[in-house]
Image (cartoon, rainbow, N blue to C red; front, side):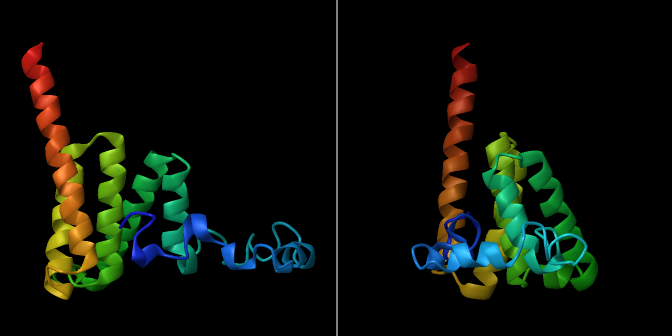
Length: 159
């Protein structure tokens, strides 16, 4: 899902918001020097604990190629751990598919985006039913892709 979806609420751009204005954020920075508990301790942005958060951060910073690779590694890990039959029912894997679709769409790889959105949609439809917010989000994203493809086709027809 996208960075503003309910599944990702509280992650990425929203980190630290509950502490703003309370003085706790400033005290937290003083108590833990920069870099402490991150380097070499397995709790950094690329640790398994924070796998999805780092990927969303890469996407939001415009590092699409790196985010694409991270999502691909995550999907390969899910496939290896769960098998192809089970990945289609595992929500974190479905979220990763949807997010990778967003990356492909942002890169202009519309066929790849459509494929990832379709895979995620099929899984969410099976798990949650058609009224699930994830299904609605993906239907919307696929409609946008169809419009982009139509506009590109029309533009090529005019040349």
